[in-house]
Length: 419
Image 1: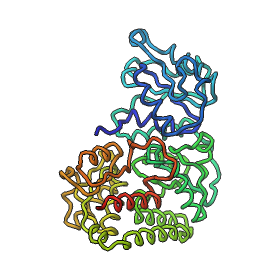
Image 2: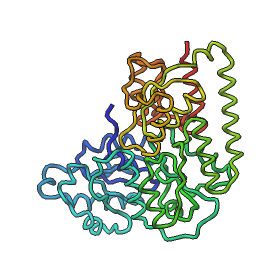
Image 3: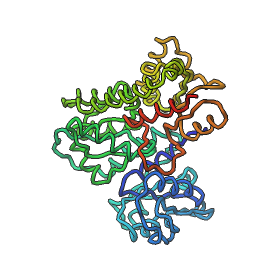
Image 4: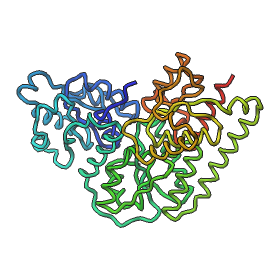
């Protein structure tokens, strides 16, 4: 499938901030998907009747200027200023103005629109359109722009506090996933100050510069942000060499890396991983035929390198499965990409990196749309939804991709697919 682009990354990154709202400067058709997607990813319980206003039209998220052909000729700055006034009348959110690729060609002066609407300090424009960037790179770059705009005052470092970064709200069941990451960090005696890009407010972002470190989930989503916070505020960056905390092995390495960097005791968090490992072992050993069937099952992975690397290592080393295809998103992390290629090369399987999925694979771990399509067309025994865009619209029971719950979910899907 066609992956989400950099324009989508910008809109969703800005809307991931709890008290920030995107003003989309563009035609009506550009808004529809985003206002639905943001409500789905980050519901905030807003009353739609309050937003029966121009530019909102009854939908609370991602108001739009609804520019037309006249605006392309005469300019649309007046609509931007008027939309900002309307937004100010109904909420106190900070506003990021994002041009659609077409409206960016008009060249409106958004600084003047902000001034005309008396929104200085509360509204700003994303410079240019990031559609040419990859989704992860754009998400990261937009968050860095947000922190730059907020420009937090320097704070004294608070020991044993961290920020969670590189965890986008597009990750599967991110709210349960975030709660789990807080639990793991809490078991090490660490407190989370802000989850930037996953529901943090502007006040959280102001407080984030006093954290001892930024702990990274997916490095692809945090390069610019962590670099900026390290250079401007001295907040150091902690990145696991195994990539994201995906699969039990990846989660354990993530825990140990943070514990070593911050000088804390990882035993409580590791004990949680050990309990999950025991539950998986018991499930596998409950049926001898299942053990034989599991050994040598083929699998394919498609995602960013920091997801693909720990998944591949864990499924091969722990479950005895064999990778048949590993497709990596182009805007991926170079470190994890190199580690993955080296790992597979040592196994004599270097050719599977970038190799298309075979006609049939026992297990495929990919975005929800492709997972469903491949399974329905009998291209795999089971397609496991581990990445955006997901097919899950409502999630009540925890089913994130990351950490211990994600590990249990993946093994459960694999075992239940066996005949």
